[in-house]
Length: 216
Image 1 (cartoon, rainbow, N blue to C red):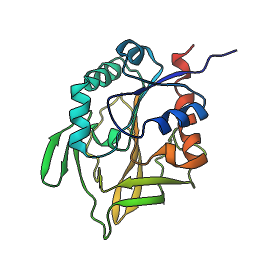
Image 2: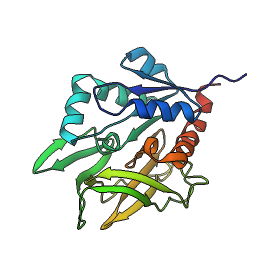
Image 3: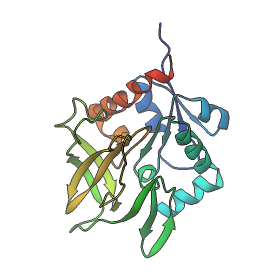
Image 4: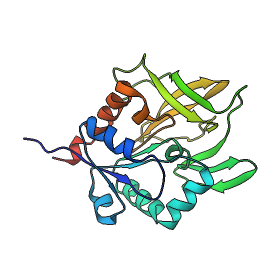
């Protein structure tokens, strides 16, 4: 019998993490909320949740040295999934209420306020999955649950061969913004899979299936 992939959910003080653990378990993972550095480095996958302000999430990540763990995993080609503000902090910086905060810098560009008539963007919305997406396989017509006022409104990373182009999934609320990115071992969603019902569980299952090579 094949053991379930071990997925560490980074415990650095962000709220609403238990629902992510439950959703990952429902999707087929051995999911554990942990701050244990050894477990985080050895896990088949690492999930970085995040709610609240960009600045507060970055401060908590740096205080717990979670930023170092994310960077070390990615340097070794080990899968990481960011959720909501856990996606936003992967960019170079975020600007909220006039405060410009340095991010993790895994991707170039800024997270800024959406240009929409009403904020926050709260509720269910469709997405335009990028060609060849693994996360959204079989989910192209589904809706996902968003709660945010800020997002990545541009993608500026230029990839040179032989590296594959990232798969970009867009959503529209007032204007287009990135709903998800799949970039080698690093993936992220602006929406909350753990709040997106069956579609969210299936998306997490697709991500977990991609970890299987690490469990053999």
